[in-house]
Image 1 (cartoon, rainbow, N blue to C red):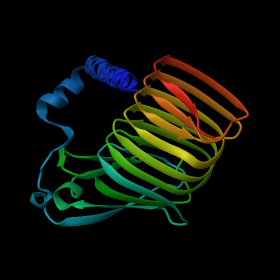
Image 2 (tube, one colour; image 1 turned 180 degrees about the horizontal axis):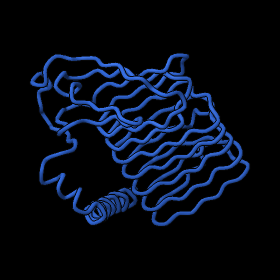
Image 3 (tube, helix red, strand yellow; image 1 turned 90 degrees about the vertical axis):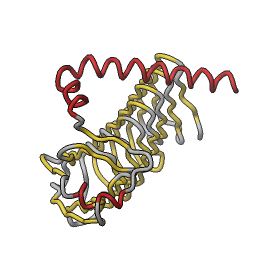
Image 4 (cartoon, rainbow, N blue to C red; image 1 turned 135 degrees about the vertical axis):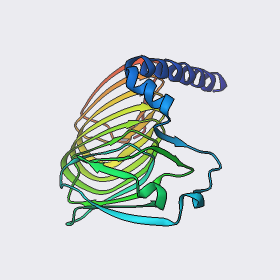
Length: 237
């Protein structure tokens, strides 16, 4: 057991180094300039959010069935409903600088906070969700034809509902639990050390690159899996 944990830990460290190096090369001048100029987001351990001012709430319009993206750390909850809106709450100096363009929530300048802002989304459905920063995400009442999720980094996501086709891509150390989503088909791609729990009934198609893990909570009619590294597929049904 200890040997296995050490292997997973070492693999995760190596993959992180390789991933960062690749991102640095691929990102080119823009990424290098952003680092040099201090743009983007960052967690600040011990940062006093009171310095950012009192909490403020802003409301944004969400297009029903749109694909949404979070470019900053969030505590996000989605609830299926007849209205379509996104309510964001957080320190005033952060919330005032938020941008909402083409379904992407970002920020002007640098994000410095010890916690993610709170995001509450209500809509009949969302086609997909891109998480480009750490996040704690809850999706409740999904009821739609398909749902696409792409997560990068430390994302903890739990989802419930009914979706005919699921498409899950996890890069980094995310924990994605869609085991309580009643789905026919699921396509899962993991790059890194992420964990995905899924319970599709018909087809489950899995590709793991690295030390990721997929847990099946229901036996699918057809299972296709490809593992490049020391990842695993667990049959937990």
